[in-house]
Length: 183
Ligand SMILES: *[C@@H]1O[C@H](CO)[C@@H](O)[C@H](O)[C@H]1NC(C)=O
Image (cartoon, rainbow, N blue to C red; front, side, top):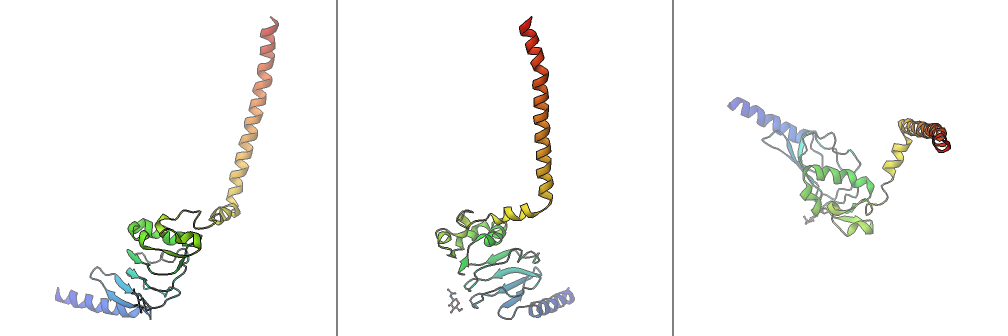
């Protein structure tokens, strides 16, 4: 047991110092993850983060945006503090919005946007798609996907089939109706 303890401490120290980004301080947790503290370092972009990051503190920096997918490779990441940053809340910030909503929804109410002006009214958690700007680009990219045109073609074919069926039924019932009137 003491041997394992020593090994763990050694591993933890190595891990914590090895990948720790320059402006931040890192601390190994007993649960094997890392506590990465990057608060108040004037960061304008995110440093390369260690794979074992579990708690990430980014408060009080100059972060404006976050690329969608930024935290996808940090499988152990559980909590994120992104308060006190001049976030530019447009559609690209939906990634951060969804990330926080999934894991720590209450944290969304502490995140405020510095721009655009429409998005500064409410905390990030209460912003609608309208306030985040025109999020139509997501629709446009799906239209650019060729598979969509197969769906469109299918709908056209089915619609034409239905019209044809309807007209066939009409011509088939007309003589019957005429027949019943003439007798
Ligand atoms: C924010 O960070 C600056 C350094 O960048 C520091 O001087 C200031 O005290 C910090 N403010 C808070 C509220 O932590």
